[in-house]
View 1 (cartoon, rainbow, N blue to C red):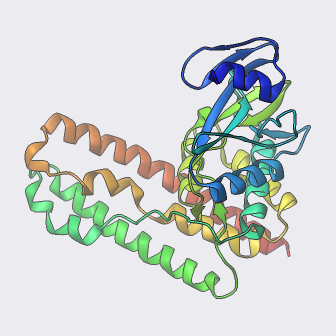
View 2: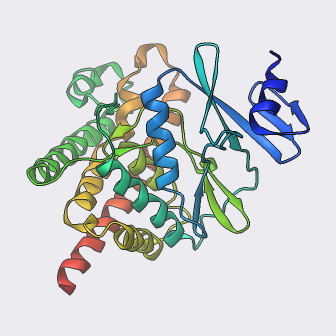
Length: 303
C-alpha cells in the first residue's frame, strides 16, 4: 500500500502529502514520522514521553494515537510513530522553572522506569594518553595543554569521589539524551520538547553538557530556578542526584576533541580554533560547577 494512503487510513486524515522523507503535511498540521527497529526501545520512549508531558507547562512530542488508539503501527519489519511537528523556537530566557519541570520529570521517570533495556554511557576523556602525546603539539601550545591536563585530572578525581560517595545510596537515572537547544519548541506559550529515538543514557553526561550551553541565557539565579524546580518535581534531587549532576559537570569533556586528534596532521590554525573552543567550554564548566555547588551550599545552610 502507498505510505501516504496507509497513514491516512491509520490516522483518519483527509489530506496528506509528503514534504520530505519524514515530514507530512496533513489537514491537522505538520506531522513527523519516526521509525523504530527495537520494540523495547519504542515502548520506553512512549512511556517517557507520556510521563514527561505535563500541560500547561511542558509538552513532549508524544506519539499520536491511531484511529485504533495505538501509539504506533507496523510497516514491513519496523514500527512507525507519528508526532506533531512544531517549528516555533522556544526562548530559554526567564524560563528556568519550565526547564526544571521537564528535567525533574525526566529524572523521576529515569529512576522508576523498567531498566531491562540497552543503555549508553559516555566514556570520559583519556587524559593519560593525551598527556603522553603533548610533545607532538607545537611548542606554543604545550604549556597550556599541560595545565589543562593537570587541572582535568584534578577535576576527574573530584568527580569520581563525589559519584562513588553517592552511589552507595542511590542509582543513576536513565535519561533520553539532550543534544541541542533546538529540541525545545514553543506551542501556545508552552515548552514542546522533541525527544530522541536513541537508547537512554545512564547518568547526566548529555544533560550536563546541554545545561552548560544554556549558561549564556541562564545566569546564576536562572540556574538556581532550574534546580529549585527540579526539586519541586523530584523532591529527593538535592540528596544524591544533584551531586551526580555536579560530578558530571566536573568531568573535563572539553579535552575530548583535542585528545582524539593527531596534532602532526592538523594545521596550526585548526589547533588554535580547537584550543579557543576548549577555553570557552572550560569557562562554561567552571560557571555551572560553581552555580550547582553554591546552590547545594545554600540549601545545606538553610536546613
